[in-house]
Length: 131
Image (cartoon, rainbow, N blue to C red):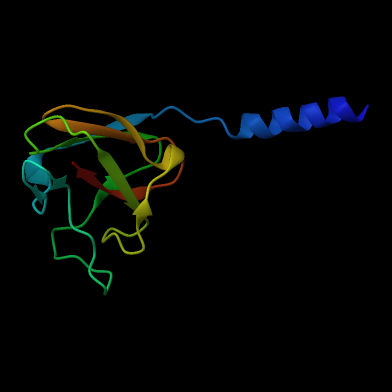
C-alpha cells in the first residue's frame, strides 16, 4: 500500500514543476539599448552595476517579465558561441545573478539577434552577454 502512495505523491510533485509556455514577446532594437557595448569578441546589452548597486541613468537592464520571450538585437557581427543571461529583481541589476533553468532559457541566436525566454511567473530585469 505504501508504494502506490509514494508514486501518487511523486506524480503530484512533478506536475507542479511543469514549465509554462511564454504568452507574450518583447523585441529590443539597438536604439533601445543605449549602453550596449562590445567588439567582435564580446557584446553586452548593458553594464554590471557598480559597487553601490547603481548604473548610469539610461543604462538600466531591460524588462524580462514572466512567461515572455525577449528578442534582443546585438552588434557582435557574428553568431555568438556563448550566451550568458543575468537576471535581477532591480532595474539596475543590483544583486543580479546568472540565470538558471526556467528563469533564463536561451532560445537561440544568429548574427544580429539573440532570443531568450523567462518561463516562470516571476518578473525580472535581464542583461545578456555574448562571446
